[in-house]
Image (cartoon, rainbow, N blue to C red; front, side, top):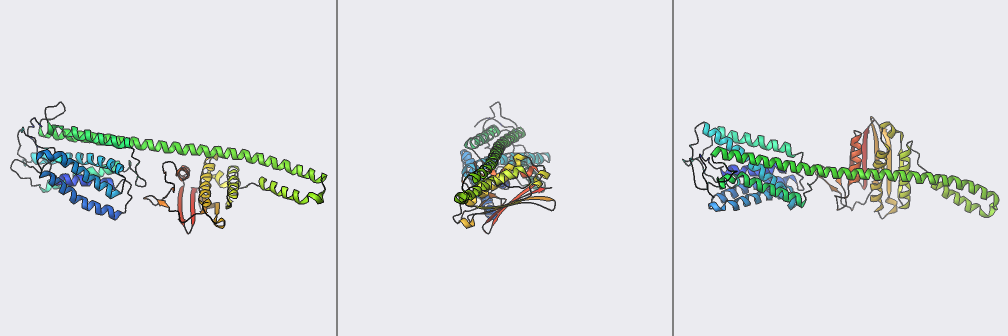
Length: 471
């Protein structure tokens, strides 16, 4: 460490640094997905504040070369607060902690720059002059050094400045970051994203504190206020880069999810077209068979084959039976799913006014996808029941007030644990959530397109999906 800093400013008091680091962790705990109860998060935050203060003062009591270890201890303490307070995975916790680390550096540097400026403007800070000695790295590795007279007694104005700066900065960060994180589901942090975030954090910390290590570089400052200005600016750029990185990752994930939903929409539509063609073929076949049976009945001895022909006629009638709801697309879906239920021993009843869908202006693809996904999920859940008497599915489509109501109810195995997100919404029961759960997402997506809402609940052995569409 070498070089000279003219009019070097006092280092950030370690109490301020500890509080800033803790506040950054708390801010992120309010925006990320939590897998643990709120009382555990509060307890972790309370213990975390004491731990961060202890870590900072422990590092301050150590020799100057200990600053790097002190920085690692502080980062580790922040990681424990985030990890234990949210119940996140280790990689996700590391990712969030790195972002909190940069935010803490930025807020601590900005506040101290403003505080020392105010104290200097009022004559409260005697200039430290030049120093050829290492003054230590501010922020995470700062010492509780003060002005030359060995004292730093914050005035009421300075305490007020600290509170205002922290509230404004962390409040602004909360407004920015709440759109980048979902409180309903965990953040998908890939190894590449985590590694990139850690690398950006290390580069930001190194460049922002370079002047404290050496002033003999093209990127270092040599004047006290200039050094803090560089540090604040670099930390702000680092935070902006991390924000842009998370925004890009979020947009990429949303694009992939939308692509999966669109692919499923197209698949459902193609299934509808194929089913429609099959039904038309079966209808023509049934019509021809009726004529053939009539001709055979006239040629063959009625007393000898009457029973067999009657049975054949019943079979043909069964194949030619179709749902008639008033909407041709819905008729195809209901007829197809009725046969699927028959094959699995499921009792399926449907009471539907298909004309309501036409009045709502729903496209054929949306109708096929919404009802296809809803009934597919119901059939899959009901098929797991061992008792055939309990395999029941009910569908209703009707008008109520100013809404078109679509309700699909089915029995399910109550022994299967239902998983919910932080908002209480049911999640897929399959282990690989990245490849499943798009059926319900598609239903929500379609309902939102028509200004509607979706509610899902399970009680007394029945699973109920309700879609409300404004008429």
